[in-house]
Image (cartoon, each protein chain N blue to C red):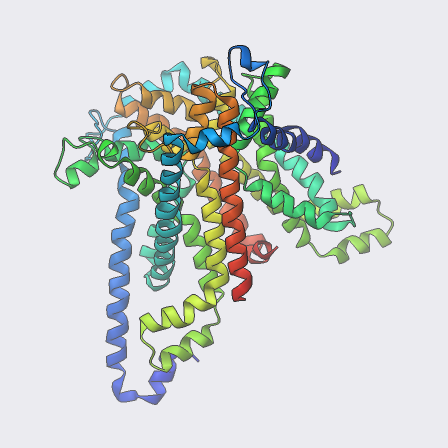
Length: 291
Length: 275
């Protein structure tokens, strides 16, 4: 029985009083929320408006609409290069991370492994370490191996930094699959690789998707790692391109910068929407957080 | 099956962690004779830090950033948003919730750009405050980067608290309401104690994530004007890759790790005592 129902039965004459009070509080909450929403919306709207404005500046204003900025940015070879580099970098990172995380998470979830608990705690601790601690030795290592300035080797380091969280995430997804299914398959004579492929894998597809999308979003926006490990202008991913844009004070057009950042942001927003569908549908994150 | 992951982690994670713990106590430099002929120098880097004015200032700025933007700002606003969203009508809840989450999903460099634009002379903020010639990124740089960081990350705390609030037992809340407890008392005496595990988890994660914040601040200010926004992660980068002091830079990054570990332990202990 809800509060409203209790009141309805107990104090029929006084219904109007508590209701008006509640609705005043609700109104205030909605007004405050709209104001807070404006605080979040206004900086973003600048990017949206400036991208279609024929004469934008730093302040937000209603645009005099044009598609010239979009045409200009899409015609620049640097735009294509930046998107290609970001796709290679984030794509490689995602494939390596997701495959290795799946392979590692299955035995961690299902098998008896000595030191499993310390290992999982170590994984969590590693996920919290700052990249700035790793970047100097990794730079040294890459100099020695001749690995600097390659999108693929840079992706390998990004994969290493995203792997701890990915393993932890994947393990929680596999934990949620009822072990009885695998036992039934084992009784029917299926081998372990076959059980993983035909029983576990189809059931953790949403988990794989979440892990992959999460990794991709992070790698797509990664700045400091390519900033230190890459130097050729013809291979720079999107974030470095935007940073260089911003650094060339007055030498760029506001509209072009806004268009490029907007185009660069769209893939991760779309991926986030896809991921949140998986989250609400197939999987309850509450259990995973408690680990 | 574990082997490939262990190989990659071993080479590009565990080895660098161990190696940087050693490098932090050496005089390694990026170029010149000490780029190959470096040696173990014991606590020399620690002594150097204690006498380094910029390091002390940088530590202070990091504390201000984490405390103001993350621990207070992000947690309080995140909680406020989560509470308000429960009271909001559907269209407002959907729109505001999505806008806050989009701010979080946007690439960090894009957030740096829109806030750079927002705080420039002639930018939206200067027009709103009626000082069109003021560049707020120069006048109050630490405040602007803290607010920009709060703007970007608050969705995380909002989602954590929303989930926590959803899992609260409704009977207890309704009982308090029927008993006539004011909204304020209900909040502090019923909701906050019940949410304590969620609050501790949020504080722990938010502190660790924000301690190593680099991209947003660096893209907006490069640590400037002067060294006014030079938090520790930026100082590590500057010492290691701009001033070529790889050994000293690594030593500073170790300080950052120690801070992270200390905060984690504090929060984990707080979580244990209250349950």
